[in-house]
Amino acid sequence: MRPVAAIYSSFLQRAYDQLIHDVALQNLPVIFAIDRGGIVGDDGRSHQGAFDIAYLRCIPNFTVMAPKDEAELVEMLWTALTIDGPIAIRYPRGAGEGAALPAKPHGLPIGQAEMLHAGSDVAILALGATVYPALEAARALSSLGVEAAVVNARFVKPLDGALLKSLALNFNRLVTVEEGVLAGGFGSAVLELLEARGLNYGTLKRLGLPDEFIEHGERSLFLKRYNLDAAGIVSVIQRTFPELFSTPQYNLGDTTG
Image (tube, rainbow, N blue to C red; front, top):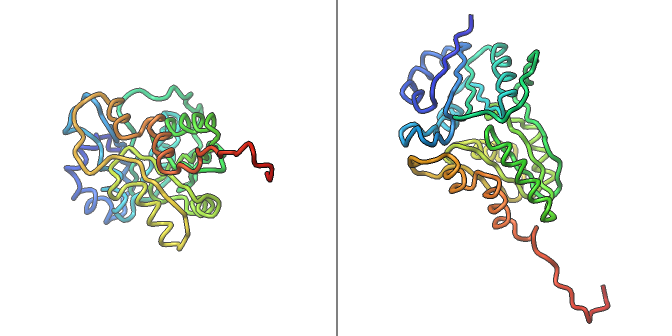
């Protein structure tokens, strides 16, 4: 029997000592299904699931995942049953994306991300609920003449080192997107891996929640405020990499080409 603890992200904060000493230190195969990961909207200020990525990924032995939709959540739960150690799966409050559930789950390769959209100008590494907004942003960027690759990270720990190395070698513009605090979060994990492997990654821009408590209010409003919706992702990329959007000015009298 594999114990599965289904709990809100903010409530799991109260059990941090148990996570470390009663589960991780003994490397026990306990599955934590973490609801309300990210902004929770009308649930209120005290229920914002802002910190779980940061407070889980620093604990040894943990595998940490975040699905892009309900179908991938099924696959992650199936995968979790095969892991001999503590597992956390975090997912947001609210309805799913409408993805068809798999008739027979097959599980996921541990630590393997998923390339969803090809591009050549900038690579967006999105986690969990930010994946679909990242895809929408890529479509909007394409209409502006900028081709963005989109990666569904799936795993916070372990990261897909091989894919990150490939991105660092082939792109000099990287963007990470997460619905969690930037301090110690997914973007930080990416930076740490690149640094540890001595990879030159050009410019990396991290999008996530700031170092403040998130107020009570509709989820969509705060996603917009913190540039975690599609329009926000596009806007940040425009400001961070303006050279991608500059239009050459031609002198009609110049015939030198």
